[in-house]
Length: 385
Length: 146
Image (cartoon, rainbow over all chains, first blue to last red; front, side, top):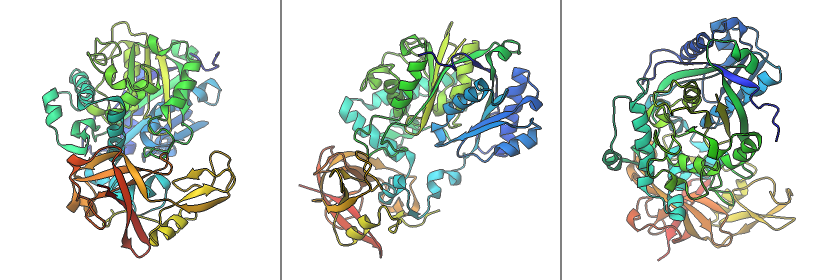
């Protein structure tokens, strides 16, 4: 299919703050710092920004960011739902906004300051739950996202023969990538397979190292037309194809009530993405997949067609997902070991891979796949040099 | 932050009949008034024929464990005395594509951590048992069938 969006827009700038726990700055201050850095990286003045895209579960809102940074008049803005399901969708919306002339310079951003235990979302649930996801899970103690994932994972193990060794493949590979990345929260903390296996349970079959970090920080990306990008400071990284998806009858996280619960949200997104993309799964050189919890990697590998259904666990064997392997994944360390910003670091790392500046650079990488959480209304895109 | 376990709102229009039946010890689901398809959790329309006509019909209360996990700390304060405790997804016997989250018990009224988790298996048979946890809330839980 000839997609009217194909290669029409590019990511021209990226920015990131330091990552840590209990950073003193507000979410707004962190957002502004990341956006300022991204604009400097691109060589674009703040006054030129006329579009902002973000997603749910953050406090730094469009007008506040715009006022604080002295951005221009905004003519395009959107905010995606579902936390980690939103990340990649910001690039989809930014590309749509620029390609259709709604704005010329769109900034996508994420700021998150939720590393303290008291700020965990699941700790703040009301005592009476009335929405379907919560009403049919929470009263019995299925309260944390990790509990929902653990229930999926046990079923997946039974259905497809996956084991904890496969989960370890993911956690250990991403930690090794983080160990190469000086900005990563886990940069100086190597992790062996034995350490993974000895970690405490959070929701059996998932242990501590199956769960993402809880960190503060912010990141931003600047999206402009492909023509404009050619005249800017950085080598353009083209947005080749974008897509969003929600599978019929699926539910956010607690997708236990559909005909086939392991038919995750990403299946709808994948169909749309690969129909629009000249670059197909077998052509992808490197990928960044949302990893709030290790099992999501199996689900994404399968849903996006990097392997067949039920083969996601086996795909992680033989070093396939580490640098030098068949499909290096989450080369910055991902949400498990670089930073947890609801998946925005997948976007920034994808750009670095296409620029050739990643700390775990895949030699001569020409294309990068990026996706959001596939257990929520989701999004994905393909970048190329 | 919640101090009790998280209770369902029992007066929401779509789901109130379920909780009313639960108070009487019956596990009911919606049956489409037009095409007869069963559905759960409660929804305003049938996804097969879009009809909003429906009746509430009683299930046998028999099911099988579709999946399970074991929740360890940190958990909400109300669950802390029981952690680690198993959580399950149960598929209903009459229509296995209808599922509900729950707890497994050794016997009606037993604690949510009464089962030896090493004994749990997917596809194990369970039987519903209602436990009154508030004036308006009787929660379905699941007793392992020997």
